[in-house]
Image 1 (cartoon, rainbow, N blue to C red):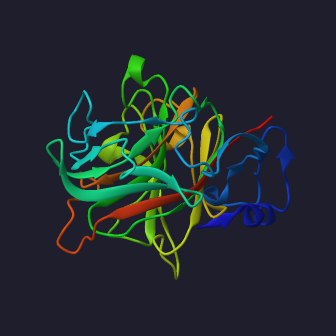
Image 2: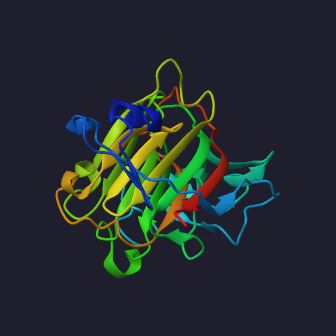
Length: 280
């Protein structure tokens, strides 16, 4: 069931306790019981109003996406990530992450991937972005978080929170999920969200999570569609330390398959803003 904040409040007969978070119990079926938190302190924002990527906020990931270690990310992706303005640029008040079909550094495609490692790393809060997604077989845009201990503990022990990932061939469906030890890759824990009478490639939508101790709530346009807690995962809960943001547009890979003859290039993931809130 897709529930908004107001639906949950109504269904639970307005019983709530407001401290750092709002907890709703009683009167709800198990599937309707949610923990909803209110994060109101804006601690980070990029409205992409400058003429270039803000180096104080973002790093570039460079390299291929088909290696297990080194400069690859293990998903058998086809693109080479660059820091060229052909692939990542700020224009007209938006971040453009652009995938091209072109030969580059031994790859058949190029694209962009940026992260906030060492610049914005936070434990708990609301993370959201307003994005218009591309469309086409083999496109894999994502807005996600990665544990800042990845260099020490590796993946998936560091934890991964996928706020939004999407198959370009399914323009009305996205997935929000978590990865950790015992529930990673194809065994990740998550849920899909189906957009009714609309498509994610024809306009902007706000994708977000509200993350607190022992829960992560998933939102699309302020509709709460899923909650993940330690009881939902088959392994250790590893979401109790700082994470950083990643935004990228992959081409191909295990999740989406390769582009086909009907996939048009270039393709662009447009980001209007990224905002992060804390509870105090």
